Each structure stands twice: as C-alpha cells, then as structure tokens.
Length: 273
Image 1 (cartoon, rainbow, N blue to C red):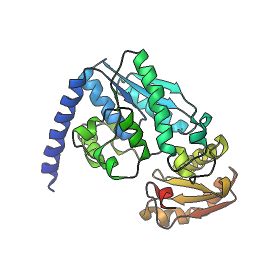
Image 2: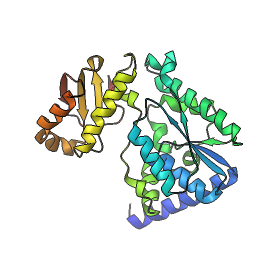
Image 3: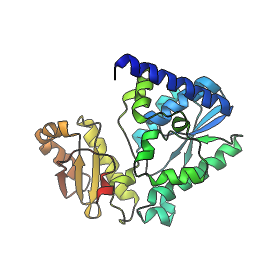
Image 4: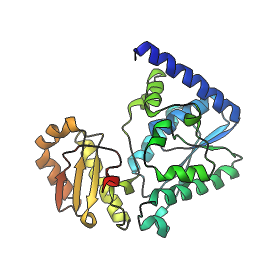
C-alpha cells in the first residue's frame, strides 16, 4: 500500500475514533503507559478535556520502570493519572498461575478500577484493546467483555499497526515504545508466582535493557534458576558477542543457567509450551 494512501486511511480512522470518544462524554481509561493506552488517553484528553481520568494499577506484576514511564507520559501530555496500589498475589487464582491466570487478574484489575472510577463519577471504563488483539490468545479479553469494558479502538477498526502509525503521524514520542507485558508472562503456567521470581525477571530484563536490548524477554524455568533469553532474531549475533558480560550480570541476581532462545523474541511464547 502506498504511504499516502495508508496515511489517509489512518487519518479517517482517527477522526472516527475521536467521534466515538466524543459521544461518551466522559471516560476512565485503564492505563499502562504502553503505546495503546497512551494513544487512547491523549486522544481522550484532546476530545474530552478534563472529563477523563487514567487509572494505573501498580502491582508486583508491573516493572517499576513501566510505572515511571507511565508517569512521564502522563506529565508530558497533561493526563489526569491516578495510580492505585494492587497486589494480585493475594488472590489464589492468580498466584497459582493457571492457564487462565490473565482472566482472573484482569477481572480483579477491572473490579478495582471500576470501584475507584465510580467514586470519581465515571461510569464508562475503556482500555486500549485493538483489532489485532482480538486475533490472538488473550484470556483477559473475556474478562473485559464480561465486565463491559469499552474498546474504542475496536469500534473504530483500529489495529496495532494503525495505533503506531497514528501516534507517529501525531508526533507523540511514545509511538515506538517496545511491546510490554506483565512480569508473570515470563513464568511457566502452573508454577507458583511469588515476589522473588517476579523481582528476578524485572532485574534481569533491566540488565538486558541497559545492554541495549530494548525489545526482549527473560523467561524463567526450573523454579527461577534457569533463564531463557529472547531478543529479535536480527539481534542474536549482537547478544552472542556480549554473552560473557550478560551471563556474568544475570548470575549476580541468582540465576544458575542462562540460555539463548534461537527462535528469537515472540510475544506469548510461554503459550507454546
């Protein structure tokens, strides 16, 4: 598709998105600071003005760096950000880490956000789910559907690629943020979640980020002693050259073995097991 044609198509989708948001009158947004929820929030701010809030649930499943990034995006774009403390590990259905963990976790997140939003006078709760998300395995989407979460991007027919294109065209700095996911997605289903394992994942990925691998995953196995590293396929030669330093640093956080996944980075690789 010619760039000019794609630009016109995304511009039309943006106008439709703005109309959809305008019709709500007020909106509370489940906010993570990722590109999806950030774009939804800045458009809501543009269309609704002060009749919006962003709700971020800070928990052991969310890296501190992600919370700091979300704060920065909110500050730079005049978003009304409310951060709530949330500990999903208190829930057995989440801590046991079953296949449908994401469903139970999303339920708790939504219920907590709903209660808070209601206390602030907001009845419409929206998130950044887009058309691309509906084609992948995402148990959390079922929870959103059951809880009546509004999905403006889906209503406007906007995909993940469209979101990045719109954010780039509108010159938002967050347009190229790497994809992220909760820290629990790095631990095999059925293996109990605890703060030690989650902290190890966060520390390990921080090390990889500092080494220049911004899009990466560190999956834990063998009760948190073995790490499987995923980076984009084109960066595998680069990480091999840095393997000695990488292994040295990762072993300082309590890992015994460090492996490189030669299939490269891919979202949801734990679902392949």
